[in-house]
Length: 307
Ligand code: F6P
Image 1 (cartoon, rainbow, N blue to C red):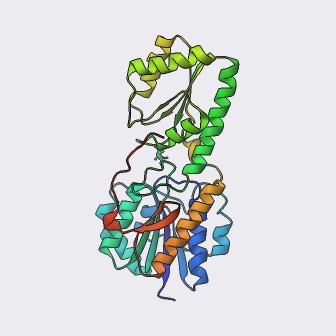
Image 2: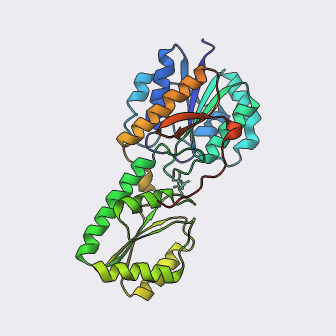
Image 3: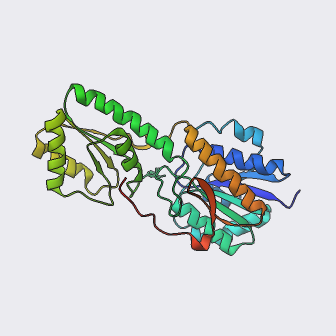
């Protein structure tokens, strides 16, 4: 047994590219003589000591696939279970931990780093791209591309048979995903929870699009307040039949795009190098490269800015 034993854990909502990151970290540190383990089902698996030995050759087979082959879970109360998690880390014994996930998962990683002598890095992995302090997140680009395909297809039919078309995206309580899909797909209006649109503006923008082109194409984040009611009222006011598409969790799947594979690999290799140097923190994407943000300087909120 070496005294360099890395465990990799994927947490929260899975995102395309997570498998790539797991492989890249495993490959980097296995080549340096480390023992690598995967944790089954995120923090829930950590609490139960569900570690499995991981080899890069085995992880590579999953790197091109969506989801996470390690499995994942959500536990909003994880920060109250740190002693139980530390017990498992000591029992194995694990010297270093890599966590992939969104804001809640990275807070869990920070709590573990604070409480243990274990080196911990946290990588942003969520299609929502709402991780504070990181400009990009593993899975976001793939989800944008999935949404864009749907929006383009929506436009094909709207041009042929005019309707008030609205595509709902995932994104939780944030609008980063909806905004990027809407911007790149030329939506007439993008509804994000951060900036609700007054009824008169909804009417004038949508009405203008209908006058110009015969139809209107809207993108809305799932977190937009009273979305269905807002759309039904708009349908009544503009007098064009509403067609509402909700692809829901299909947006979280799919093979990772080249961008997400590159992002995942870059963040994971950098994170592995940081661990090897005895450093802990969030591995953020900043100005086109990975950067270490110490956990105690990790921002708590990512400001939404209109593109
Ligand atoms: O992981 C982020 C996300 O996909 C959000 O976009 C979405 O609101 C949420 O997870 C859905 O969570 P669950 O899979 O638990 O329904």
